[in-house]
Image 1 (cartoon, rainbow, N blue to C red):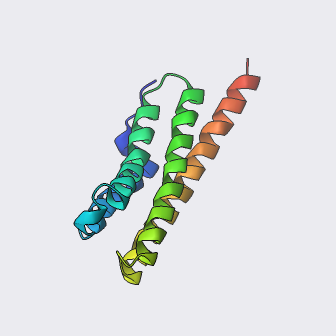
Image 2: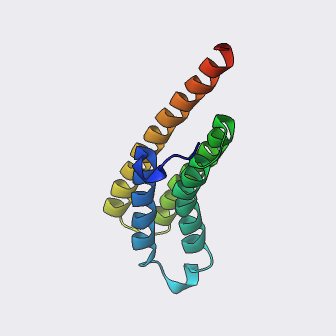
Length: 127
């Protein structure tokens, strides 16, 4: 049951977040290339990638597993952005705007997870 992930609101926001993270990390020092820059980019790109991969799984349970991984990656992104701010690698305005996008993306993803969980539990009882 393949879904067009590009039409999933959580994916659209996660993709926007990944682009924003790449933009922000371009300004990080070269000494962070294999440290925080790499970690932050990996976590940010993991969110839309897992939504996309999960959307092409055949079972709702598998889909939920990938959505859960995406949710965990959002938590990583939130922390790494806070760390970057605390290290002085980004200013308060950059952090505020990116944290807002992380928040909206996370809430949207949580809503999607809740919706899919309801579908799974409804299917279980409708035989």
